[in-house]
Image (cartoon, rainbow, N blue to C red):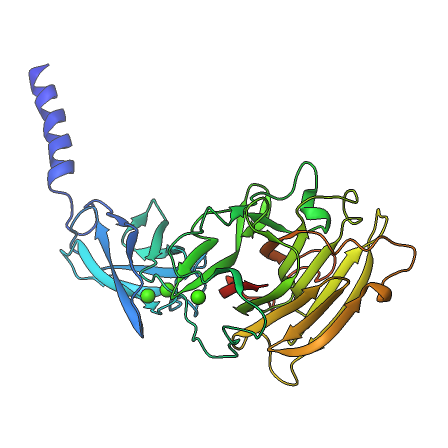
Length: 396
Ligand SMILES: [Ca+2]
Ligand SMILES: [Ca+2]
Ligand SMILES: [Ca+2]
């Protein structure tokens, strides 16, 4: 018995420890870990990754890798790799290689893409993918202050209220956020809009003396876009005056920024009977045109008084413009960069309707995405989009 046992143990030992060199040695497992690194600000940044073998062997090993899009886009955010080889010389267990990342100075989200191990000779792959995270290292969006600026006084008027947006937060004495998608009472805000409004710093922030509303393409609370909406209801409301709002508009199909007003007290009843004053609306498929509109009438739909004007060339996105109304008893006038383009007198409205515009109204600033009027964004619409507001001033 004893001799048979020792023969058995010896055979096992011989098979495991010696073998025929290069044939019986273990097949190593190739693996790679994901990395999270800052994007960089110009040119291509190199992200270094390490490919490892679980054991050193006497043969050379080749492992190939490719990149696969995630929230990071090939070409735009990183340099595409397809079946790139990494070669281990006999005995090596670690090889470093780099992926090219496209640096920029734009504020954006962290973005990810996938590194995929696509093949190996003399090694096996158990875990085929790893995540590469490009960390946002930028705090600012890029714009200049170029464009029209309004005078800071008008004969016969004094400044009643202004917000120059020079701080780092909304002034709670003037503004409130209106978050959500309007549900359950007014889902899609009555227009089948696609955004969910939030007060997160992703959607509303301050930079260089400007309020910035950022419309983002992201899944949030059942919606595919987020943005922001603020209003002065119950805080700052006015009857009559000269109102100037300086802003740089966003652009793109399906984009719908607005500066508008609703009645502080619905003295004639609910919308639209007590009125709505739209100082500026731009729908992305008409990038050079601003609309000024009154909504009124007995409802349920509104009667409208609408006029618009367009830049001869370019888009309202290209630089700052000033959107204004001059509002007095029984009359509202609209201006773009100080140029009158519409006058609504009480006598211009439907004769059988209540004229509700001699009452107090508050302000709303929002950036909608999609909806009945602009339609949905399409492949030509880039995100994020920014509505950049320099100031709102009320003279009376
Ligand atoms: Ca950067
Ligand atoms: Ca960036
Ligand atoms: Ca400002």
